Amino acid sequence: MATLFFAFLLALLTAVFALQNTDRVTVRFLIWEYESSLVIVILSSAALGAALMFLLSLGPRWRRARETSRLLETIETQGARIRELQEQLSGTPPTSSHPDC
Image (cartoon, rainbow, N blue to C red):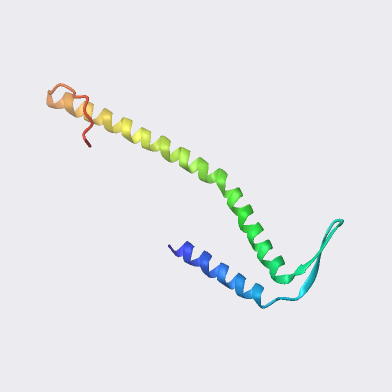
């Protein structure tokens, strides 16, 4: 929740900053030249930065999700093994039903 609040605050400050800088500017990059309002330049730069950070975070997010799935599967397998061993110790025949049902 704190991260969401911080992101909202940062977006609000960026928008206020952009709206206070409305002059026309010329943006040059290599052989490309474009004249626009500074508001557009600031907001598009912020949006491009946010999009790039989102794309760069997809790899680690995907790895974490895959690792979480693997760990949950391990927990389920180990839980089944524990139940099986407990049933063997108590002398009752193993059942195939899931205890959470």
